[in-house]
Length: 149
Image 1 (cartoon, one colour):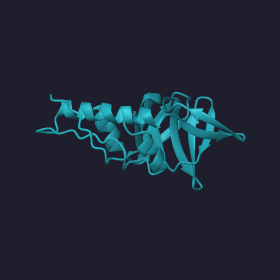
Image 2 (cartoon, one colour):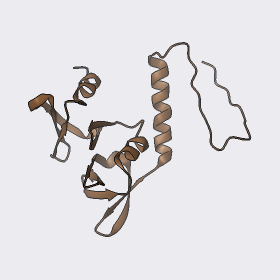
Image 3 (spheres, rainbow, N blue to C red):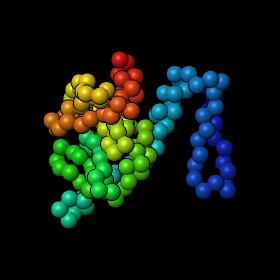
């Protein structure tokens, strides 16, 4: 593997390009690590609870969902409202172990305690907090593939 740096004074932000002969496992792992570093650079998430704004480590978030055009972050310590939309959260959390469970839910893969099949091709997740979160049948195949099922 060759690693080099080019200085381009006109750039507004750093840009990394991964060039490879084929998109094999090594290239995918390297790209995942780069996304992880980028997400770490994004820092903390902010959430409001009882009139106060809190800084939350993304790893503490069990899942995020939307209701009535508002987004919420669920942690072991409480439910925080965030200004971010779900797609913005998904972008911020890219490279971390979050996945889309439905049109309105993002789940932290590391916070899943157990899972079981449910009616209609859905999957019922039990989170570390004991709460149940459902993966819709549209997103269930992606989770099964990730689990190797």
